Length: 212
Image 1 (cartoon, helix red, strand yellow):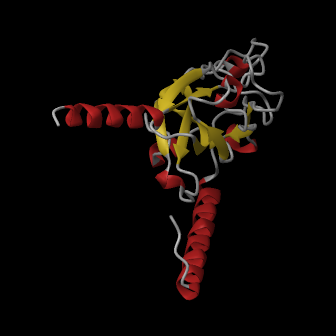
Image 2 (tube, rainbow, N blue to C red):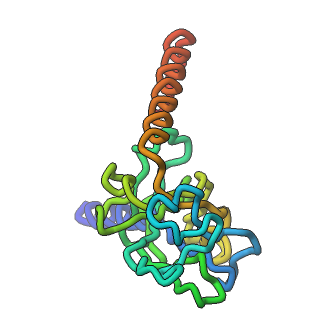
Image 3 (cartoon, helix red, strand yellow):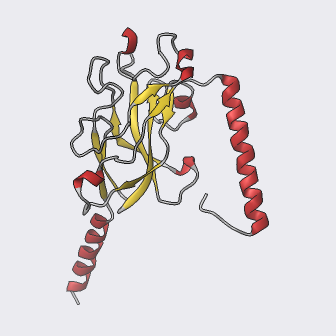
């Protein structure tokens, strides 16, 4: 009977370890094992609201057009599969990284980082870019008031038992960052509000509940 606590402890350790998974957060085309696809970060049309030197469609870098943009950060946000509310995504601070310079052959990409998540074998995720002078939290309203953008949500394998090539952000695709016009931001928020109300009305009338 004295061995029972030890067995339970070992089981707990094994369970905790098996629930973790490593993710390689990268978007540079030169990353080993990364399948060919456009994953570059570019300036959106409204990036000119920050500076007219930020040419829409240009590849984001830490010193674009001679501007000091070393404050830009990229990060990885994740959630359990089935999550539909962006507010329920978790930001992984271990993935915070900076962008390459404009003279790099992989301008538009950040320096790769890796992190271990407490979820396995898979998550849904998105990459986010923001001005860390405004906030250390990329999902905060303060961060979203500056240069900001995120990728579409994608599926990500995190299992430690998967092939190394599948643990990189293979499903990440190119996206833009910028600063929306205040009026446009309000319209978007209003649109999302009406969408949220509509979805909840449909859930109540149909008797279907969701994960939120």
